[in-house]
Length: 386
Ligand SMILES: NC(=O)c1ccc[n+]([C@@H]2O[C@H](COP(=O)([O-])OP(=O)(O)OC[C@H]3O[C@@H](n4cnc5c(N)ncnc54)[C@H](OP(=O)(O)O)[C@@H]3O)[C@@H](O)[C@H]2O)c1
Figure 1 (cartoon, rainbow, N blue to C red):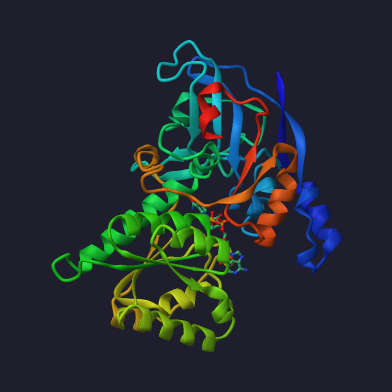
Figure 2 (cartoon, helix red, strand yellow; figure 1 turned 60 degrees about the vertical axis):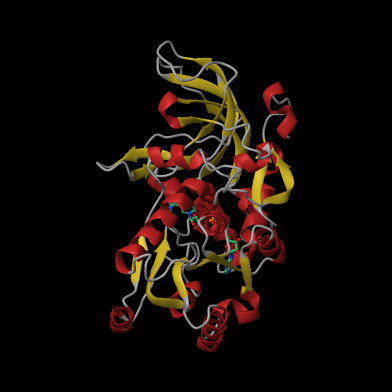
């Protein structure tokens, strides 16, 4: 049995880079991300077959198509089937499946393989060998990869679909950033923290956690729509474009002065930086004494440099995380609707429009997290949240 599914091949990536040469702005993702067909594995005793209802576009798709971090399609043997965030309806279960039955609506997590502590060594549909993703109409996957969808959490189906990958990432970033700061500065010395994130879906969810726990939260983003959506949740905003996206040291200095002014001279106690590149020095300059800079992303650059002496004098910590554990994924699902209220892009894309959605993500013109609707016909249990 096979299903329509998107794939990315290393030969298409090479051909597109050959076509555009140094003109990276002309790179056309739709020449690389192609609607293909995928042969589904037979259902094993602990597997389920699900039909996809909706999924979010994740930034790893952009990295995979451009091969700008690593050439994952080439490393995986020449072709990958991407997609590691999804909402689906189970249509068939293996003989030993106990947690789910046909008709259940579920979320995926993207952990492919874990270390001894439960943290990911490999990510599903990315660097986990032989893993196939869920940007498809149907999928066969293990029961262990699924979490029940909290359909009564108050979010729409599209908002729920925005969360399976970004929310666990934000949940771990927040726990680590907050708890590391608390190792250094106890609650009796400072109750309310200043917390900042730079634009992007993960950072926005990170700030919702901070705000929910009573801290001052600041989104520094270039998108007026995304800033406005977060302001409604009590998250203050800083327009990144007022500081020219930190193009020069003078912009960083002006940004740091603005942060100090808005935080009564203290600066930011916890900063989430998923972008790196020019954002990194701005995040460091804006930090309070004993501050913590957390990251699980490298959208603009993979490497950073910093002044170790200055970091010591200020007692700053840089912490690196990745996707959460399966337990963390399950726990953070409890916060859908009450804490996590994601801003989704104004257009819900059709399945056939995934390449256009990816181009628009790359061009950074979306007003929130981009969502694709896969199923034309939705199950009756999601009718009220469409
Ligand atoms: N390790 C993990 O488990 C994990 C999980 C999720 C994501 N990630 C990685 O983290 C990064 C961010 O992911 P995300 O899901 O938060 O991204 P996202 O929702 O797609 O948002 C990306 C944001 O980047 C900002 N941006 C885009 N181009 C920019 C530029 N040239 N200069 C400055 N800002 C720019 C935009 O913010 P504004 O225009 O609003 O400023 C945009 O909203 C990606 O690299 C992704 O692969 C890692």
